[in-house]
Length: 211
Picture 1 (cartoon, rainbow, N blue to C red):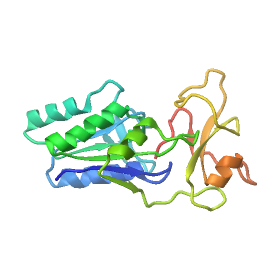
Picture 2 (picture 1 turned 90 degrees about the vertical axis):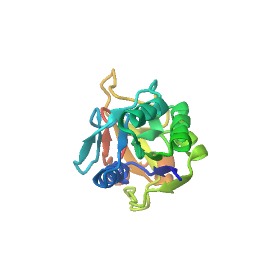
Picture 3 (picture 1 turned 180 degrees about the vertical axis):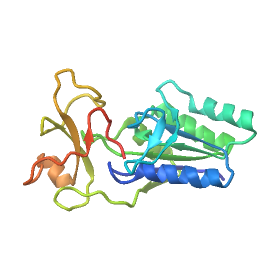
Picture 4 (picture 1 turned 120 degrees about the horizontal axis):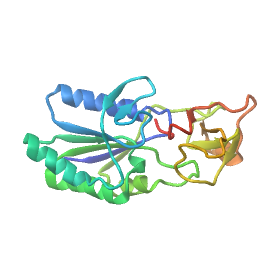
C-alpha cells in the first residue's frame, strides 16, 4: 500500500540530500517517478548544499499535482513515486492532491520541508502535511545553534538584527538591506541572540532558506 511520508527538519539538516538519495535509489531499481521542488537554490532542480543536484519539476502555486501524476502514469504506464522537496511552500490544496495520488493511484509520495518559518509559525503546506501524512518523521541529521544546542528554529536577520515580522518570502530587498538566515535553538531564537562572535550566516535572501 502506498504512503504519504513527510520528512521535516531545520535548514542544514540534509532534507534535499535525502530527497536526492531516495530519487537515485528508486531510479536505479528501474522505478518510474517524478522529482519536484519549489523555490530551490537552483531553478528547475533539487539541489543539496553538498553540491549534488538533479533536474526537477518546478511546482508553481497553480500546478495540479494529481493531474501531473495522472498524466505521467498514462504516458509511461506506471508511476511508482513522487518526491517533493521544499514542500513547506506548496499550497494546502496541493497537499490534498498528493494525498489523492497516494490513495487513488497507489503511488508513494515522499515530501520534505521545514516545519516553521522565521516567525516560528507552521508553513501552510507543512500544516496540511502534518494533518494528512501517513508518516511524519524528523530528519535525524541534527543542525546546531551557535551555542552547540540542537537547532530548532530558523532566524531571519536584517542587517545583522533578528526580525520576527515581514513577508514570508524575501528574494530581493528593495532598500538593499542584507537579509540572512541563521539556525538557532529555541532559547536564542526567542532572545534574538547571535552569540559572542556575532552573526553566522547560513543563507542569503536571494536563496530562500531551505536545506
